[in-house]
Length: 275
Image (tube, rainbow, N blue to C red; front, side, top):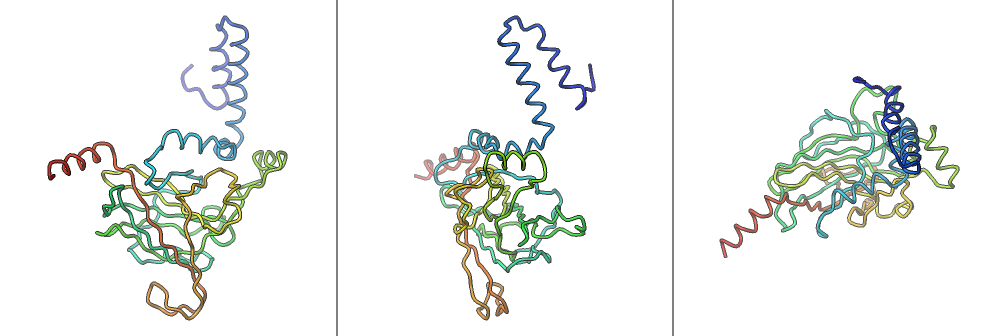
């Protein structure tokens, strides 16, 4: 039975339950396999998100000290090979939306700056769509990779995130409608941060004024992930040094990374030795 595929694996998994001597256990296990495989064929990743399963697994597997920035769902719209940008660049690359300047710092739990981190950023446009959702997608937009400087700082220009609906044209959408739930996610920007000596962080920074914060359809909001996106009127000097012809927003946010255990032990040992 090598080379099982999506058409044969369910029947084989059920066959392997046939020697279960306890009738009740056999019924439970065969029912579990059948239903689990049926769900897996129906937008399973999206389903696991809206049932809270994704965040449950993240909560179990990514516990962090109270001072650290929390993890949240990865989402389906990350892509490998996003373009790399210099600090201060415009990663929107033509994506439609109101200008937004992000200035973030990366620090460890003891306040030390984290230089040389790889920061992968992606978000939707003002219509609520990611670049990969467009049939005519011919370039990466509102996504990019940057690297923190010697002070652990990352800054760039993008667009203001907006709330958006998850896809509702499949069984997950019908399930949400049948259970009286909405499909909306509060406005956010995705970040994936990888730095030597620290745990990888996959997270969002949400707009703290969004009306869906308490009812995010994928249960992804955490208090440590709320950011203040401040509005500035047209004519004021933007962070890039130019007078902006249109209103724009700024976000300042501090990410606190969790050291890997060996790194934390080394730092603690060095401090003790110095004392």
